[in-house]
Image 1 (tube, rainbow, N blue to C red):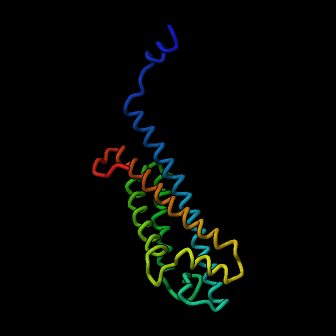
Image 2 (image 1 turned 180 degrees about the vertical axis):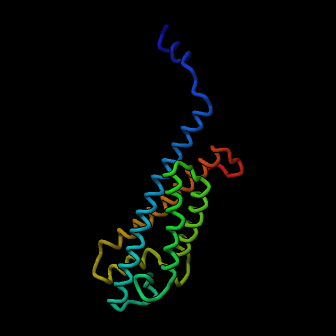
Image 3 (image 1 turned 45 degrees about the vertical axis):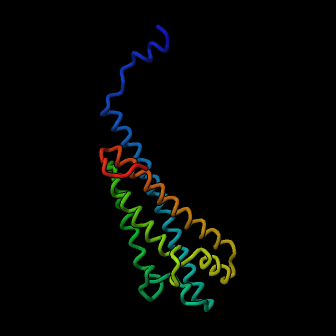
Length: 182
């Protein structure tokens, strides 16, 4: 018997086992992406705090201050932005507990993409554009952290897009045909 014959005669993986393997692979991918999101979000919020201090210390335009409670006295949109962890941490916990949580991740990614997109890229007076990030760090005398902060923001957006793609594929593969293909 040749190698080809033995491979053809090998028992096929039962569909239930194959589905379980795909589900676990998606779960692990979402866990990794969720952990990456967590790190990027913490770095992004740390940048907000650092730049808020620079604005106060250097007397820069108050519109450039995108920090707030609990790091400054005022409750601001920054304070509300800390709720992103209420989306990221449960997803990670569900993945660690063995749940796929694809619909959780897909919904969370859409919400976070809308928030990040509006805050950082919408043409409003209140936006915190990449140029504001760069200018604030430069005004504080630091030309290294500005580009790193913008890179973190862009990586955050890319990670959210990756979560959305993987979560949507996982949900569709898991028997949710009502979701669009990605």
